[in-house]
Length: 392
Image (cartoon, rainbow, N blue to C red; front, side, top):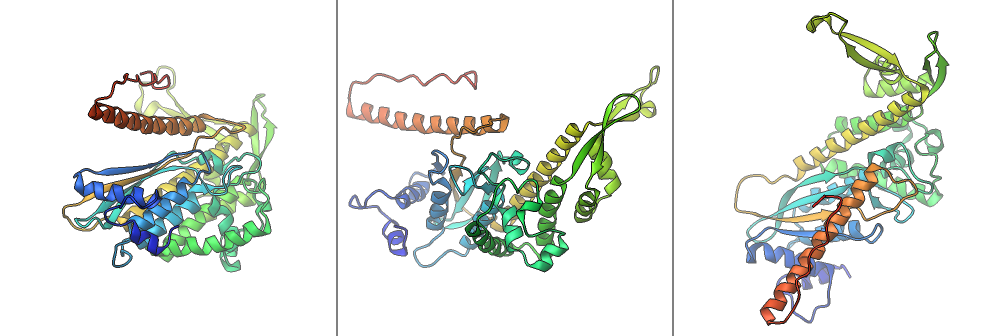
C-alpha cells in the first residue's frame, strides 16, 4: 500500500481511476497550497488506536519525498518523529503506541511544492502519566528503552538497575520478553535520531541524566512523624535515592530535601512596614503532601525536558534563508478516551478532541451546503450545536 511505486502514482494530477488513499489526501493538500495560493491543513482525528500517529508518519514520508529522490530535509523530520514517539508516547489498554500529547507541524514548501523544513508545536503533554498509570498501561516509552537498551557502563554512570521492578513508576507494568526486545531496538533508534538532530554527546548525556533522576526521585518515600507542637511532619526515607538524584541533577541534597518536606511562605510581622521586614517561614508538610510534591517535581522535570527536546527539534528542522514559501500544516491529536480515573488533564484532552471533530463536521456540512446552492437544490440550514463547555 505504501511502496515507492504507490507514492509515484499519487504524485501530480490525480486521475479518477485511482482508489482513495492516504497519499491522495497529502497530494491534494500539497497541490492546494499553490493552486489555491492558500496554506493547507491536514487534521488527523479519530478514536484512540485508530492509527492517527501512523498516518502522520506515512504522510510525512510522502510529503517529504520528491519525484527524483528523498529530500535532504526529510532526514531530521523523520528523526524528530522517532524522538517524539519515544518521549511522548506510551502504551495504553487500547493502543500500544498511543500519543500522550498533541502536535502541530508546519511543513514549509518551496515553489515546487517540495518540503524544505518546518516548525513543531506540541500541546497538552500528559505529564501526570510520569507518576501514575492505570492498570495494564505503561509510562512513557523512553523510560523502558533506557533500561532495556543502554549498555552496562551507561547504566552504571546513571546509577540505574536494568529491571523495571526497581522503580515505583515503572513496576506496575510488567514487561514481557517481547516488550524488552522491542525497547532495546527502539533505544538504538532513538539514540540515532538524537544524533541526526545534532544533539552532541554532552546534550545526550544530559537527557539521560534527567530521565534517570526522575526514576530515582520517584523512589523517594516519606514516613509520617508527630512534631512537638502536635502537627504532622515527615521524615525522608531512602536518602541514598535522593543523593543519587541530586548527583545526576547537580544540585544540593539538603536544599532538595528541604524543598520536598517543607513549604515556604512570606509573612510581614505585625506593625512592619514591608520591604526588609518581610520574613520567610517554613511549614513542614505531611508525608502525603511531601509525596505529592515529589510527584509534581518528577512531572515538572519531564515536562521541561520534553519542551527542551522540542526546541532542539525546531532548531534542526528550521528553514534557512528567505524566499517565497507556503505552509502545509499537519495536526495529530489524541483520540477520545474514557479512563477508569479521569482527571482535569483528560477533560482537556477529550474537549480538544471534540472541538476538532466539530470543526471537521462544520467544514463538511458547509461544503455540502455550498454544493446544494450551486446545484439549485432545496435544502434547510442546519444550526450548529450549542457548545456548552465554551459557553457559546
